[in-house]
Amino acid sequence: MRRLGTVLAVAAMIVATIAPAWAGGVGGSPGTIDISNALRGSTIYRTVKLVNNTGVATPFKIDFEAEAGPWMTLLDAEDRTTEISELLDEDGTGTSAIIRIDVPNEIENGTYVGVLRARLAPPDTESGTGVGLGVKIPITLDVSGDQVISGALLDVALPNTEVGVPARVTARIENSGNIQVTPELTLEILDNNGTPISKTTTATNATFPGESKIFEVTWDTSEAKPGEYVAELSVKFGGIDLGTERREFTVYPAGTLSQVITFMSLELDTEPQAGGFARFTATVGNPGQIETFATVVGELTRNGETVGLFEGLEYLVQPNETLLLPVNFEIPEEADYVFTARVRYEDSETEPISVAFSTVPVTDAIGADVPVEDPGGGIRAGATAVGVLVLVVLAAFGVWMAKRRGSGDDSVERPPDHDIDPDKQTATVGSED
Image (cartoon, rainbow, N blue to C red):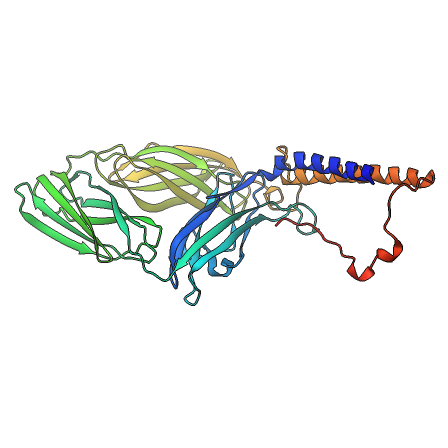
């Protein structure tokens, strides 16, 4: 019996040393989420990021467990009204989503725990074989019935502008309380003599508990005279005065400040298929002195002939800001293509950037029914290695037992027959938990 224990212990050690090589390919951030002063009946939002570094673009299946799990829902990172149950990290850099927590009204004060469980589907889901990888993120809530209103005005910025271009005041406001609050922002503009010439109050966007959010208030300069001005921004937060920040700025004559857009790069993000979409990312920067609207335009050609034109949405790029602009268009058929893009701004265009690419056959795309190579020891390699090791160990043990029986060695201890209760014999199957 001791020899059996030794064999199984060695097998466990081998598996333990091999498994981390492929199980380490997934992760989540933050590792834990702790929420204090969660108000009964409130809605709380938190952002989570999942990473799939296995080399296989498989979506995470998301669910929530434990006592507080039923309170939780996963939402699209760009749209808090869209519920999702899967999250796909296509390139191993990570992808984000929002957790919505609806704290019930009827619960008692106390500490409650929920767990976000993200699992990659096993590589061979149709046959039921393979190994699924996953990550768990515990979410702890300290629930109370007391409303806490607390916030902070973290930063205020106002660049110079010119006549006809709005003066844009941006403010970052943090909600450190436990209830939703809509800040009230008041912007007052004074001339260089200190005389008030404009006053605007706005209260349109809410902040949720634990959220830090950027707000914008503008002043129309179309009738302003060139010169020096002062902007005073005051913020009230649920009845609490967060103070007033004062910024000096200059309004220049129209056409004084340079408007420049640089087209920094154009990258193909997917392997396009016929009938599908090609997805590019255009990196655009503004090294100029004033905000500028920018639009990506492009031409798709095949064998030198134009097969499609592209014009994207218009984006506002602030001075010294860099934006990643999406470029998506449909591919008509299998062929070799060239996509040539420019960035249009004001009355100018940047120099073009061209990317040549070929469509991939549908059967070669990720997710199709073809073997997926994983030379880095990803999900398939890890599962195969572990399975082979276990089979080798079990085969060796079977040979050893056969020899024992053949030699008449009955040294293996067995429980008496009357100690075996068939009604109490059970079998368990391990799974990723």
